[in-house]
Image (cartoon, rainbow, N blue to C red; front, top):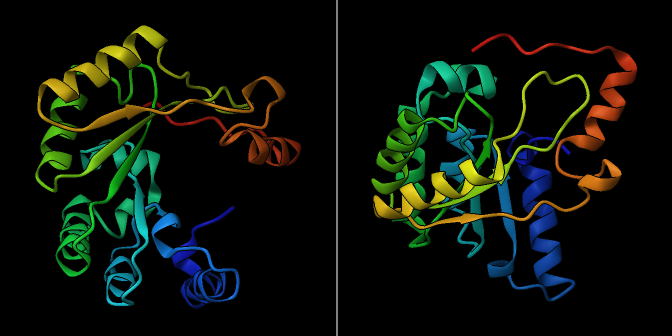
Amino acid sequence: MGEPLANYNVTIEVIRRLHENLGLSARRLTVSTVGVAPAIERLAREGLALTLAVSLHAANNVTRDQLVPLNRRYPLERLHEACAYWIEETGRRLSFEWALIEAVNDTDEAIEQLASYAGSLGAHVNLIPLNPTAGYLVRGSEPERVREFRDALVELGVNATVRNTRGRSIDAACGQLASVTNARRRSIPVRAL
């Protein structure tokens, strides 16, 4: 767990070892980041044919500041520059990850914002229904809303996929393992957006 681009040198070393020592194709490796813009640009210059996935979750700075605190340091405009640089430098498409949160980032306005942001980069969008997580006082979008959200993006010309959640039934899906550890420390409510 953690932000791989915050530990850049180790991340690159692991990628190189997976590729050179184990024979894994870099094209089959994905680096997922919350958007450390300078590190995305640095990664683009490495010459590795890997996939970049950016955990976006909101396409306006007010909401993204709440969901992804690093956005205060690298707001959407700066992140967009880094993503455009990635595409130009590598010739590879990137993906945006979007955890759908009921009444927070699953609105019609959010669809328009995401379609504009992702569409301007030709990015693929992976929609991920938010997993129920102890101590997190918001809910994932209902399945019908997830489908409507995806269909609206596709209608607006954005390639979008709904990701299957795995491990939810045993509290081992994305976000749930960390919540078990954090819940032991204390329960932290999310500020109203």
